[in-house]
Length: 594
Image (cartoon, rainbow, N blue to C red; front, side, top):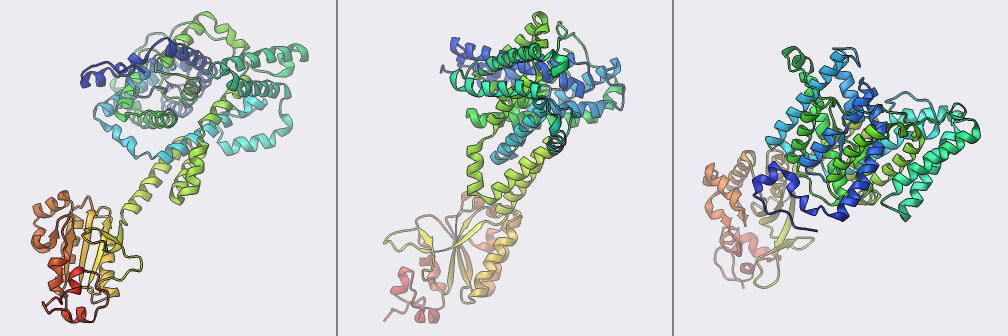
C-alpha cells in the first residue's frame, strides 16, 4: 500500500479523499470497477421500489443513487459506505411530506427537494461542529446486533420476490413470516426455481470467482428465467417478474424551494430525517468497518452525508443515507477504495443512457437470491458467538438491538444504545472496591487482594477501581460505612486510589464527609497514590482542609509508618495478624514488643 500524500492536516479535513487517493492503482481500479458495476445492477430494482415507497416517480430512486453516492464517497470517511435511497428514509419522506401535497405531484417533489436540502444542511452543520463524537456512544455490540437485524430484514424483504408471493410493502418481519405460512400453497415454483438457481450459483461461484460471482450469478438467473419462460409458455404463465425497462436520461437539474412557507412545512421533518439518516449512515459504516478493520471518523461522515444531500437536492435527489444493501454488496464485491461508489454511479448512468432496456430481462427473483447471500455475509457469527458465551449484559444488548431492529429498523438501534448506556452507567456507578493487604515480599510497596488473608483489626485497606462521581457516591459511601459497621474497631481506612482517575464535586463532598465522620470516631481516612487530577480538584475546592494533606501518601512510600502511631496500642497488644512491619517491632505507643 502506498503512503498517503504529505499534506497539511487541515487539507485532509477539507479534502479527505487525499488520504486514500495514493492507494489507487491498476489493482484497486479493477476491483473497484467490478464492485461498482455490481452495485449499479443491485440498485436498479431497489431504487425504483424505494422511490415508489417515498411517493415519487420511479426514476427519482435512481437519481438518489447517483450524485449523493459520489459526494458521500469523496467527502466521507468510510471506504465502503455507499449513499443512496433507503427503506427507512423513503418511509420517513412519505410520512412527512404527504400531508402537505399529493404524492408524485410537482409540489410534492418540490417539498421533498427542500427537505433534502435542509437535512443536508443540518448534517453538514453537525459535522463542522464536531458532533461526530455522538457515534462513540454506539457500542460494538450494538453495531453487531444492528447489522445482524438489518441483514435479516434485507433477506426478509426479498422473500416475496424469491417465492413469488403477493405481500404489501413495508410489512414487519414477523408478518412476513406469517404471510409465508398463510400463502405456503401459493408459492410459485417457476419464480422460486430462478431464485434458487441464482442463490446456488452465487454460493458456488463465490468460492471459484469471488470477484465476479454476483454478476455471473445474476446472468445465470436471467438465462434460467428466459429458458423457463420458453418451456412453460411465457411470463403470463410463469409469473416471473423482471425489473422492467427504465427511462434513459440523466437526473435533471433542480433547485429546492427555500420560501418561508416551504421551510416551515418541512423544517421539523428535516430534523427527523437528519438524525435518522446519520444514525443509519454511521451505524452502517461502522458495521462494515468491523469487517474491513478501518477507523471511522464520525465528524467526517456527518460532513460527507451533509454534502451528499445538499448537492443531491440540486440533482433531483430525495434524502439519501448509507445504504445497507449497496454498502454490503460493495464490500462483498471486493471494493478497495471509495472510487467504487463513484464508478457505481457512473455505471448507473451508463445503464440508464445506453442499456436501460436490458433491465427488462433481470428477474426480481434473481436479485432476491443475490441479496440473500449479501445478508448472510453481513451477520458476524464469530462475534455473536463470543458475546453469547462471555457476557450476560452484552448478550442482553445484542438481543435487544437485534430483536428491536427486526421490529423497527431505527428504533432497534436506539433501544440498543439506550440499554448499553444504562448498563454502562450501572457499572460505573458501582466501582469495584476491593479489600487488600500489604504484599509480603520484602521491600514491596504493593498491595494484594486480601482473599482470606489476615487483615489489620484497626485499619481497613481498600483498593478503588473506578471514578467517584455523582452516580457512584452512594455505592462508595455505603462500602466505607460497612467497614466499621462490620468491625467497629476498624476506624481507620486507607484507600489505594491509583485507579480512582476521576472525581466530581459530589464525590469530593462524600470523601470530606467520610473523613470528618472517621475523625469523630477516633480514626481517619487516608489515600495512597492519589491521581494528580483528583488531588488538584480537592485542593481547588478547599476540600483538602478537611481531608488533610498529611493523609495523602505518594507512590513508593509506606503509609503505615505514619498511621501506625495513631492506632490503639491495647488492640495491637492482643493482635496476632501483625501484617505490617512495625507490628513486629513495637506497639503504637512506642513500647517494644516482648
